[in-house]
Length: 553
Image (cartoon, rainbow, N blue to C red; front, top):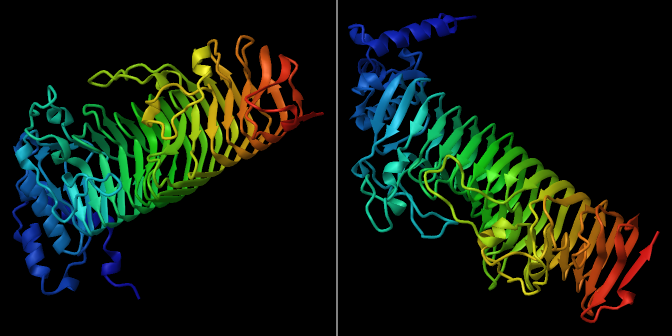
């Protein structure tokens, strides 16, 4: 049998809320008195846990000048005390300092509503419950414009704006105070969550943060949907920054950042990122430290990413495993993929990592048009390649590239092609110089697969398309690579073993298809393909012999 409560319609509910929020003079309609009336009898309020708390009712003024920190905090506290509901930021510009979000609270920012971070650094405080470590795999900042600690069922939704006024936190010169009076790790993130569960942030514009825009630490069951982040006013304006998080889903987001667009540090597991666009000076997907596993990244567009769109740094004792990148379009990038070590001592492990459906044009980097300061670029960023750079004791295993088409900028010289002593622990962002391959440099990899890979250059290039150095158990099928008749070779094998090449094509005239170096080279097979544009198929050096290679087909 239906009761009267069953017929309490959404329209009537909204009418009740509207009367309460505009202050009609009916005493029973104000939030404070409604709470008092129902405190001892929760069943008397059919909206308990579902009411709207308009911050105007708590003294906020949306004039862009008056501090609304206390009003917003009071509305959140009341909402939390009443078992949850929605805190409404209506049209207007509301200036705030640090505010704590609490369990079961939805913060709704209306289309013309804006939370404006104060330009006065004194309005911010650290969340002491969030520990600092100085280690980016744990945490190096605990100040948020909006933050939550050990809370659950929090939602922040737009389509309004949160503006951090980040330029006010940038020092005019090194060592000088910022206009806001605080710098470094004392600056606030837009959103900061620590050990929280069931977080949703959707359809919000996060603008000009003073630090990282969204930083989520040791939290689980997180959904980020339809977020637009734009922050290029501080050198380390990150977009999303996850530290040891699980069950995270990022969808339909657009990020234009200055630093890492989507960083995953510590032990991040069960993560999906899809249908997003990213642009940055440095990395888009950056991995470092801990155990990163069971992660898929798909259907994303990366554009104007000058640094390294996909950067995986295996720190001491770290492990990266079961990670898939698929259907990625990279337009005007450098890099574009780098897997390497953060330390030669006690290196980590990276295995079962696949790159599928990658289409990219790699260019010479230029300053980001909308950044507020210039950028300098390393030589290796200017002449970049895919780098899968391991070292003895560092297990790189089962790395695959399938359906990959990349056009590189070119410009490599014979001197750069002749490099053999590539650092085992190559600096981040190609800081230690130019790799001796224009397409793929791979070292100390076991189980490397290339299938339907096409490598081309936009300008003359004297480096090989691919260099394998101490690579074992590799299969190359359907490789098409551009060569140069003035270059040493199209491919170079250094102490490589158990390598099978099938259906290989040389796209332009070259002197030599493959140069084989080192007495350890063995069991390299070339089966079929079209090598007719190479003057000679093989050359040998540094102790390699003809017994190491067999050509058939």
